[in-house]
Length: 100
Image (cartoon, rainbow, N blue to C red; front, top):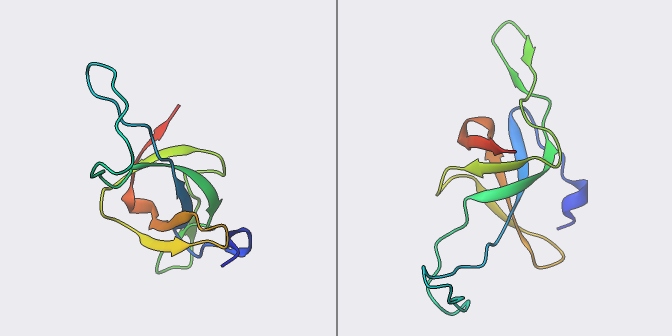
């Protein structure tokens, strides 16, 4: 699937999870074969227009393309891109914070 052609709807956001290198407190880098948790940090690639209320008013999104965000651990829908990379489509409410 070509992720550049994905346009999220309503309050949805397309995010590419950022894999961080895991180190022990002593500075030893852990290999990928060690059981890793799902990443919770990602880069926003595309943003929907925003949530619409019952009166038809649209509330703009708080995020923009390029933002680094922290999202809830087991949220979103996983997507595999043509480049064999993993992507997520998240709801706005699944985003916990923006990293500055």
